[in-house]
Length: 262
Image 1 (spheres, rainbow, N blue to C red):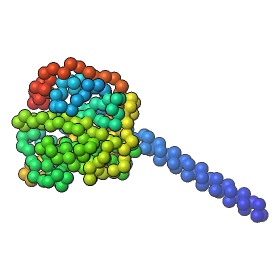
Image 2 (tube, helix red, strand yellow):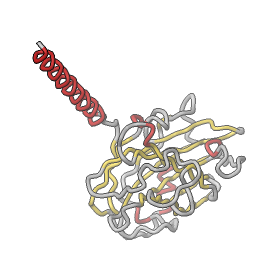
Image 3 (tube, rainbow, N blue to C red):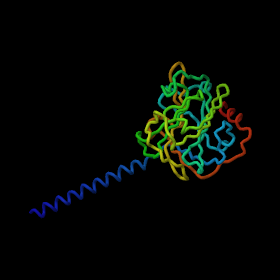
Image 4 (cartoon, one colour):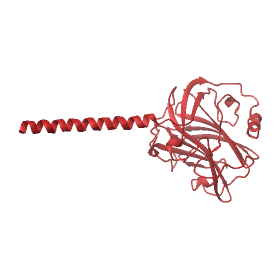
């Protein structure tokens, strides 16, 4: 009888272990199965310089900022706001991700001190799921003010190189964000992505968007994907590709601004 009891207990334990393994595999499959609605394939640009001269970006894919994120009852009138973004990388500098963000905004709001309610001043935000875990506990945020000075959230002088070119209502951000460098005081999840290195075929989660602020508060948050800024399912897939997009950088700045206003 004792022999049979022990046999039953051992069998029960084996069954429980198997059930646990199956549950783990099932949950893993759920994570793997998450497919975001949009994908940006970032190509390489070998001659990238953060200098506000953006001709080298000419062949990079453009995505419109035309989806509401956390704030806004509806999209603003095009005379009030219009935006678009591009992404690139270089295998010679794999810890950095490069962005070009072009904004037309009829009025600059800059009423809050550095790193204090930065979302209620006109600013562009970059948010990452570096490890593609599709959970909030993995998200990291950078924010750059439209005043050309404020670095908030994870953004710091150590990890952010940027140039803001302003011409009337037009704001052009050329940006390089280094995931491996020291982060600002409010990054989100500070340890996530510290060992990030871009490589051909790698996919991470990306939300980049603009805080459109007027009348003392944020009226719209607009990006390339709809849904909450801290919901990683509402991000796009950012996939790195080894192809190069180098061009001769001549006379493209006016063309870019013109394209924004069409």
